Image 1 (tube, rainbow, N blue to C red):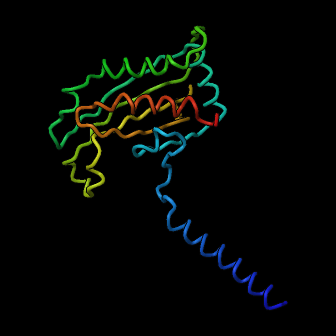
Image 2 (cartoon, rainbow, N blue to C red):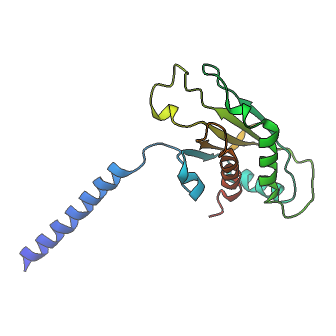
Image 3 (tube, rainbow, N blue to C red):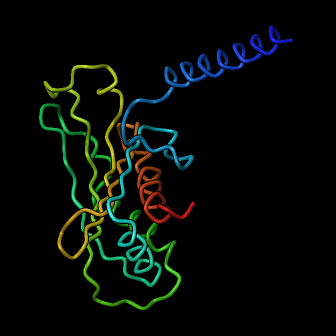
Length: 186
């Protein structure tokens, strides 16, 4: 009888050890990789929240119609910039604005101090710092950042896009806004 108990315990412990090793080997080791939403799983994305109470507060401000934002683009420097021949900042601003407005429930604009900012980065594939094939595989990324009244970042998300003509920037922007508006709500 004792033999069977010892064999059972040994088998049980062995199973957990092997399972733990397997999970450790197969775990994604990139810190900050976002996989909360299905849109974050389709491309490489990174997400980080720094102040949950302030994030919740800004989410409510957006729901109340506070959707002012700033934006800019970062064109390729070492490569010929081509992305913005196909899509303009005015077009991406309209996409961003429309995605923010999907979350507006009331129109009670006020002058609360917070900063919404996004930018579009064009991947500079000839940048001498980019040595791996993976670093040259995407067309660019969208970064959405929220700062508090003291200009400190309280939330930041980065979502890649793959099309060199920016056909999937709309998806990247939509995912960035959704990432913020659902942060800590799931």
